[in-house]
Image (tube, rainbow, N blue to C red; front, top):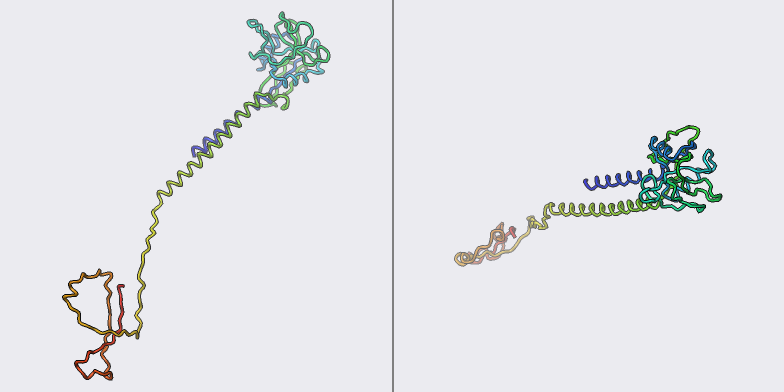
Length: 298
């Protein structure tokens, strides 16, 4: 019973973990605000709504956002603030959540990234033909911005800054897969498979032990057979001719007696010699006797 409970808890834990990973993968929602604000103002606005400026950690996310900003108006040269900023200590470009920049989508026009700049933007189409290129700005010019929200449901409605100037787009399933998620899912599958094998082995071992205990506690079988001598029925009219003789008592007493179970008992119905047989008149003639014999105890 304990093993079954552990298995159920394991399945529940794997399910919840996969659900959490799937929620993070499917439910990153992006809000495209067309209001013209500075980078710091845009960051604070996202934070007030429990969001952050967009963090682009994979090519799939970059492609999704690039498609989302096409044909949107209200920004300077189609530029949108994102959560990319320069670390003043290391002089490296990191995302607002502290993760490093791992995609290379800088355009090659001019100095890019510019060491004098502090914030990053994504272009709708700049230079012409390069959609979704990244570049750096000082952040002192107002632009539109993109907020990112990670929720447990793709149907969650975000609170827009201005109803007419904000578009919320959920990240599509196919465009959000990342190698990390695939590795985690594969690892969880392997753990579940190994756990299932261990569970089966434990169940078989417990069943084998239970069968052994049952065999030990079972009463021993009595293989001895009780033989009973068949009863012999006496048949009327069976005559046995016997000549009775005197036995020497002293000789018989010297012999060891037979066990009671092996001493035959003889029952005899003695009939005298018929008068018509010869020798009846002579007293010295040995008298034969007819007897019906029945032997028991053999």
